Image 1 (cartoon, rainbow, N blue to C red):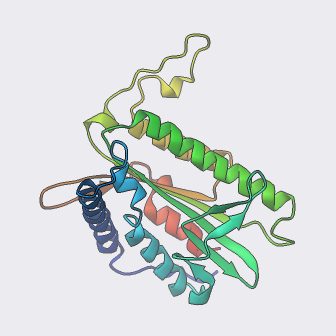
Image 2: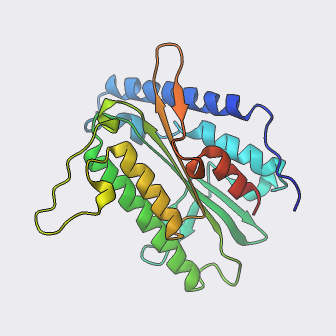
Length: 237
């Protein structure tokens, strides 16, 4: 197998993508706050989209470096894939080559102050998307082809509300031990690990980041869920 090619300044490129995430997100929030229409709560920065484009562009560049034709990569249009339980779903990055689905990636983020309901929404979305596309694949929706590579890329704000232990209520049955007093940061890490354990996704990246006045820090708490492990998995298909 040929050695995988990655940018020599990968860490710097990741830092730039993190900076772009915060800058774009803040800009979107301010723009909507000044408009006549306001999204509920903190959704203004979420529904604006594009805040994760730095990561999308970097993954696209690495795929091209490793031999994927640029014309086979879709990041801004033609992102819909047919499903089994619903007509279609829009992904964030697709590779479709020779009429075969090669790669599909979902990029998601979550920033405070509300983590509880948003955590449930993110996990339900990810599980539903995986179930839908794998069932569609099994039923021959994509024709006769090898199984696609599915990626899940999650960026979480690292702050007190995301790292403090969270009480869990289950009046009828005991929850799994790993969720007791687990923070939302812990829960996301558990969730992404289980996505891989159950083979719902081929790879998952879980990154945390905190916004600073001068420098926006980031980290990957688990190497198996790191951006480098994610990139290596996707670039070697």
